[in-house]
Length: 198
Image (cartoon, rainbow, N blue to C red; front, top):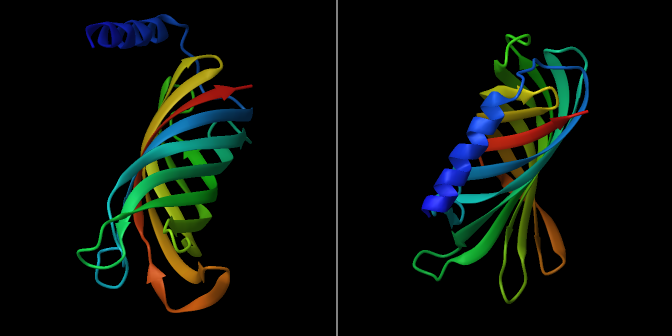
């Protein structure tokens, strides 16, 4: 444990010693660590009671200017969901594919606050021996955070996003149907990303 802590501190010191850089134009690619909290109807009343969960993500973006960029984000997190009250929770997964505009303030500085907003497609899948239950829908994504440029080609970011999701379709054992009324699957997402700028 001490070795891991020391290694993490050493890594941060190395990053801090690298020549700092500001945002740049062009393509970038990165990975993310996420923690999602799912709310809305997923409270055991109108939908399955779902716990929070962690996962991973990928981001591909293009900077039109040092401050303005367009991103495509894919991410997935693992959860457990209790379909019936008191029943044994089942494994579940939440996935998102988001297209968003991102604006970095102070784009000539190493630490840059940002805002982002976009639209997304979302899926929530509950695994069951009799067949997976899949909900799909769409919604909006709004977030804030900050990026730290540790070098000319490398940045670390941290942020929080609110996702306003309506699930409109359900699929079970190969049968698909429209949900009426729609289910709210609003989620709050915390993420840390590591990005390489080409």
